[in-house]
Amino acid sequence: MELEQDPKEFDDAAEQMIELGNRLLDADTDSDRWEVASGLLAGAVHFWLYTRQPCGEPYCENCVDIDTAEKRVQELVRESRQFAKESEYFHTPLDANAGSA
Image (cartoon, rainbow, N blue to C red; front, side):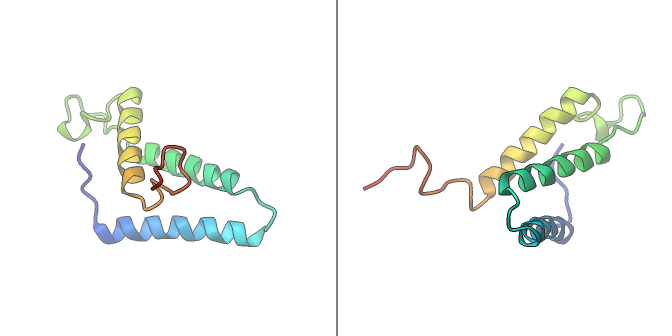
């Protein structure tokens, strides 16, 4: 299933998720960044799975990549990997495998 998103809708949703994370961290300076991020991720995964429910029509071409739970998880992992690799935070100078000159 190829991503066919409206760039504005996609960008707006991603930006709002980042802003929500920042607001949550700003509201409680003692909050754990990893816990907040994991909570946001859990909510995003839940919503993503909700939106990827198959339509129920046998042999539906639009649902072929998501017509089982395992296929949905595979698609979720594929998209997540793509978004991670596109992130400016994918590689950092502090990565254990980062080279130095």
